Length: 474
Ligand code: G6P
Image (cartoon, rainbow, N blue to C red):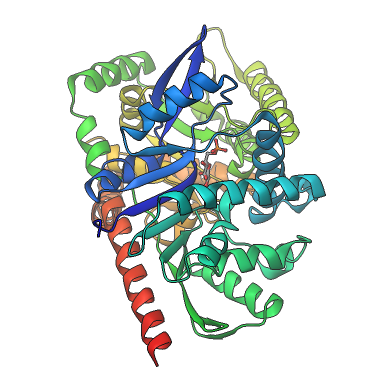
């Protein structure tokens, strides 16, 4: 019998294919999941199944890409343009994403998107079933693939399946707005272990299944038919050493020096987000505007770097958000700039890791203020990168990370006055207090890192499976 393997399934692979002038190239993804599991899945003799991020029309090219990826233990699931539009942009990002982030007015409920979601989930499940053998462990990731656990379970009743949701699970009152809520929950219940970032997500999930499905639960254990399913929180960590060690590398030191010299003594405030309404970018700009208005002594003495990484820009709400941000940034700059100072430096693109590391290291304050976020890893990356320079984290109470990082200045992201006051507090904070808070948060993030997260999840999955097996032999 072959050695049992770990099969990871996520919408995106940890790499993406880029096509330029008819030639394809493999680029690595920088996401938390990709860096965290990137080496791990290979060590475990694992395979990663997912979409390579681009439509590949040419069949010969698709097969060449597939062979090359397979040599790296990656199994691509190719999507057509229509599937990208209806399953990815449509049901995943215009139905599930807005609802799970409490933006129900942005959610659409289109049957054709739901049909595409079902058929693409089947496509992913079939890819798993083709390569899975008895004894393997399957780990499905995130909201794009909620039906996959049960689709696999129907074909492989005894296999070990875990599901982790990287975004919030909303309150029942919001979740029940989805006409196909029961099918989605049934999809998840195919797993043996269902993980979320926080205890609140687990609570919301259990409340939804108790009201929508015919199940019973004892705390976080759910009895569904003849099976027992465990739901548990696993707050995700980052690769602490990767961020911490990068800061002292010569290339990052060179960039940091340039950034700090360029500031000419001004304080640096930084925010880094994917373009998304859930990140609270417009509300943050309004908070910064209030700060400049109410604390005029800081005009000319502080600069705000707002970095936005392009994302999902074919979805109308994202397109609109981009326009609104452009307008608000110009408005603030037009109102407060002087001949020698501009209050906001705004960037709309991706950045190399060395530069990001230098920006984190150089920033006096990080403003991480999502309206809602499953976890938020940017704030953890900032903390890991503050090796010796002082820094303060201003963090939204709506980010999953706020449960762990209680030494940050915690704010409500919609409260512009509160945000302005928090920036002032951060600027006034005594250096020893800043160091003390940073040290506590660093110890926490160093310990509860991505490796611990992966191990905890997989250990709990083995335990959940054992419970399952005991039940079936009774
Ligand atoms: C969030 C989701 C991930 C997703 C990422 C980037 O972090 O939880 O599943 O991959 O955003 O979004 P994208 O739509 O570009 O994959």
